[in-house]
Image (tube, rainbow, N blue to C red; front, side, top):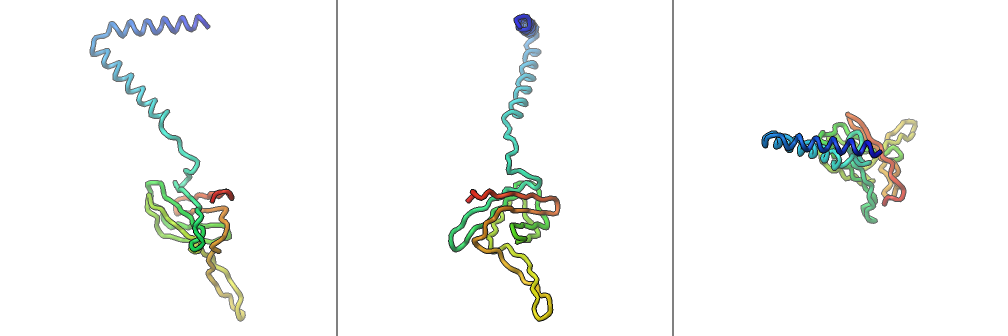
Length: 161
């Protein structure tokens, strides 16, 4: 181990000696390049890694508790730089909300009563389609956001309130 440390010490001494023999302009070039390399490496180290909420369509999804009047609601934010087209928000039980467009950076707030599903009932021998809203006190476990360009599915923990 000492031989490696000795080799490193000699190499650094030679490097410093060569640096001292450079002209002032050569020394400035070395300093500028060194600072540039340091800043590039620092940027890579300091840059925040993608958090666990990042997904294919760059959606942030939150289920929040409202009051007795409003009930639970869902907030979905498009954190990407691209618009979402032909968007379908879906929760448990096949309840959906459809939107043609969600702009980049836009937050969409959806109350549980906004989510609907179609049910087919037999009346007088005919199939009748009826739209039913999600119950206001429904427990949401899974939220899926589908767009023309991709989708994300988020499992909401039962403890999240």
